[in-house]
Amino acid sequence: MESRLAEIAAASGVRDARVLDALRAVNRARFVPAEHVRLAPRDEPIPIAHDQVTTQPSLAAGMIAALGLRGGETVLEVGTGLGYQAALLAHLARSVWSVERWPDLAAAARANLAAAGIGNVEVVTGDGTDGLTEQAPFDAVIVAAAFPAVPPPLAD
Image (tube, helix red, strand yellow):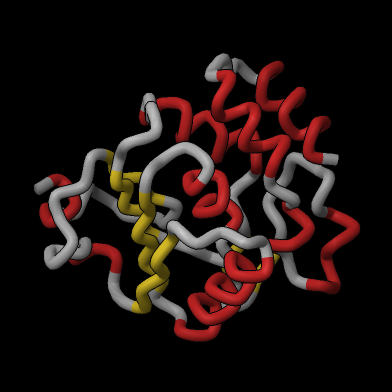
């Protein structure tokens, strides 16, 4: 399944070999609701709680590739969901801080990341528009949440 998602991402224009390797390494099925596991191999958003959806894997790969990560960075992710994109980032950066507004999703993401043996991601419950000033600055910021404009704390 993961190889197929990497092939789809490559076909959509992702050329960063490290990002494609991360797609192959992370089992997406660990990061989707049990009732939607059958959808995990598909390159499509999957419904999660609070009328949210996961980011389509090829889109996540494209956004991550655009960051140009080399391995030593500290990354801020806004919109953790169930932790899939954070898991991908964890394979590419030194550390990841991820902000999720819904406490139940944040707890599920923490559990999913722990079950996958990923230890370099910290999931924080809060409003991602505020960033995480206590942990700033970040080498890269990725947003998997909708905003009408870039919130100033994220740009800062």
